[in-house]
Length: 336
Image (spheres, helix red, strand yellow):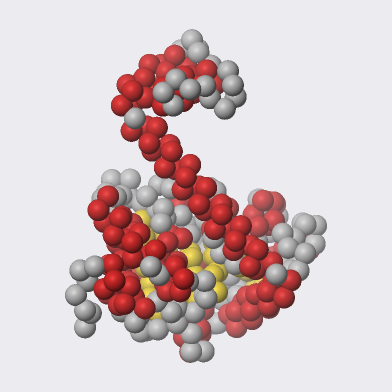
């Protein structure tokens, strides 16, 4: 039974004790759009940040239908059998009507959700870049403070989501379907440059042979891509959520990657860089929100948009005018 959650201190104590109800309620606060909830959520997190950083952070992405949730469940069950505590942050597409989650990952990971060692949190993306939930990073820190050993971040795998996920994890894994020919050529080079591993899923039954050919093709393609780390050469593996093939190898690869980057010092440097970039993205987001909420700027936005659309003004000139209004007449950075 949770203690009464009536203060940041009470939340922190309950979260440090692994209280799942407290974790879920703190996540709701962080994801809330209400100012008072957000403030309380940040107060809770500020007091927990020194307990974060101990988990293995893994991002998993891939196209719709590749079987991300099924493979994550199989991997998660393997990890809890190894004695690990696991948090899965499964980012659903937001409903365009309600803004809420559409898919509901707890229903898609039914066996894993029944394990007390696993904490699964589906979150609506809120329309943010690439379908990554607006506060996924903060939620990841909460889970680490609660003592989870592994945090898996699943994303919808569309648009720029790959970049967003890669910017918050230690190991970035791309799931792929058995394919060939034109489908294989459709693999984006940018995704290959981000990936620490490519995993061809659904390597079972009638598609097993095609999956192996696909893996070999991707293995060859990876040799032509400059790796993101001098300490790690990305690999291509086979996996099956049905048979369990490749699941142990997937986790072993994560551990080998972690060891290589820890020894070289890259893991610590990567996390510092991610934290710094995260801070600046929040600064930019806050400035944009403040600009749009500024009464005088808000009054001028329709006029400037109309001028740009009617080709009466360049976008640069209109943007400069709005910024100068926001800055109270001070010239913008370009000095014009």
